[in-house]
Length: 500
Ligand code: BES
Ligand code: MN
Ligand code: ZN
Image (cartoon, rainbow, N blue to C red; front, side):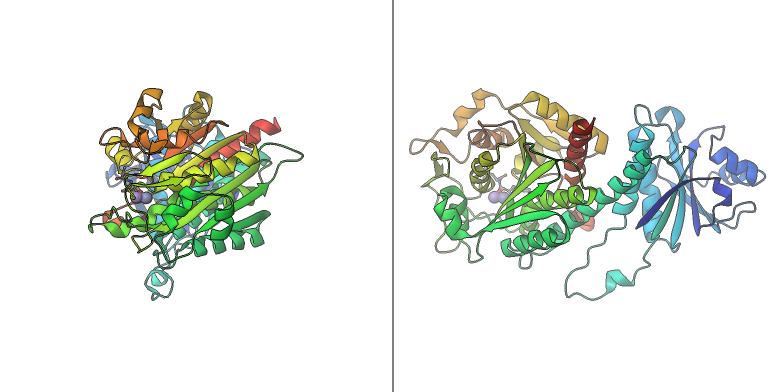
């Protein structure tokens, strides 16, 4: 989707579809009020029919309104004025985006971005709108499968954002950022949605290599032998039951002038999780192709960051392997030595995410990071605790946690913090190694994070459990692209702060 931003009168805009926000209530506010005037009261009489739903995001498409240059007018409800906050704004944009993505209009003029959202700047409005509009155009094209999706109308491809503010460089940047984040999300969704027989560790490595050709990124791929030399015994113990070769992928983005410690992102890259010898039940096991969504979000975020050319350094690390129950697979009770030297008794081979992450977290030390954030579809317990609204957040640094919570609210890609208290560490006790890889029935998300905390003492660290947020199940089954918006916002804010 192409975006332009300009200042102008909505009724005069030459476009296939004019999109106008309407507050529910007695009096029309601009730009709807101006449009009503220009149409000699036509807008008010359409609204008087009550055909436009009152809920934010409801839409009504009308045609050939005298006084409006555009042949189509898409009215979008913003809900009640006193309830107009971030959620209503997003809902309105999502409603408009959905209508545009499935409609016939090939271009559109959107006058929704001048709404006053309490506590948010015009640039926030623009970036949010651009991202939501662009993201709604995402469609997964399965490789080698017919053109069913491609046959659908393509939806609006060119969007003009109309504002009454002067178009500043800040607003132009906001447009580009929104677009870049949507692009990063699209990559993350594609990787997540691809079947596990296509999206293998090798495929993830090739995707990283391809990115490095298109953008200013450097990629290293460590093979099994390299991981052996580094003594990544924990990572390799997960890979040993699979035929697919594991890949340990490292992506460098250098955007900062001069030396500056990088933000390191570590993404769980289990391209399929059968559970290993502690095998999972059959129901919905197909969804374990999404067990590499942490990895996908790291690559998606790096793509967005590189597209925006942010002045910051970022390293992405993706330990990628399948978790399979092959003849060489790890047995419950096996003891392995991680790269850190700490030993692990593997009591459940289905708790494999932490086993690949711990070696990646140890590897991260060499970059002397400003902070490390790992992203993982780590525990079913997280979905039980928080549902599918926020991602779980656990951290060894409260300032970093607070920063992520703030960026989550800003981007609408929210996180909720859980405690990482020392008391929980006891649950990982093992009679045969430094720790067990599971902590029993209770507090599964916390004990998983406690395990990782033993490998992150050298730096500021946050863990995002995205088991509930990385994809949706059911009729609309598909990857969400989360938490690319959160991570991108985090890195944008960090680079803006560095530039000030
Ligand atoms: N990838 C799963 C977690 C998961 C399960 C995410 C369902 C989303 C939906 C992870 O590897 C796993 O199997 N975790 C176990 C841990 C347990 C054995 C301690 C779990 O959550 O059951
Ligand atoms: Mn598992
Ligand atoms: Zn898993």
